[in-house]
Image 1 (cartoon, one colour):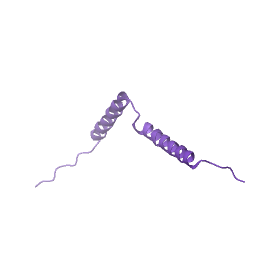
Image 2 (cartoon, helix red, strand yellow):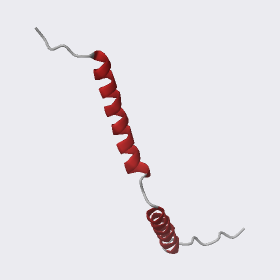
Image 3 (tube, helix red, strand yellow):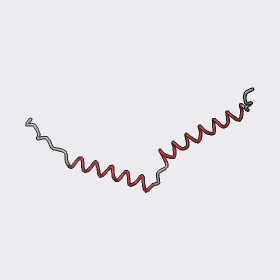
Image 4 (cartoon, helix red, strand yellow):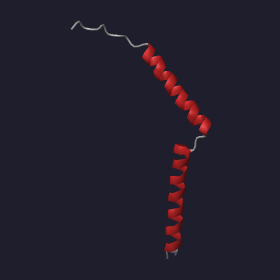
Length: 63
């Protein structure tokens, strides 16, 4: 005969596991310190400025 399991316990264990997986995903996505966010923003702004500095200007067309 097969093993008898309590379906309520199995359901609750599955839900706990799913919640923990979602929490881990959120930790990865949102778990940065303010200093890390500030540094990333500053690097993005610096990259944008460097990119703009290397753009070619097109000559104005006579009207």
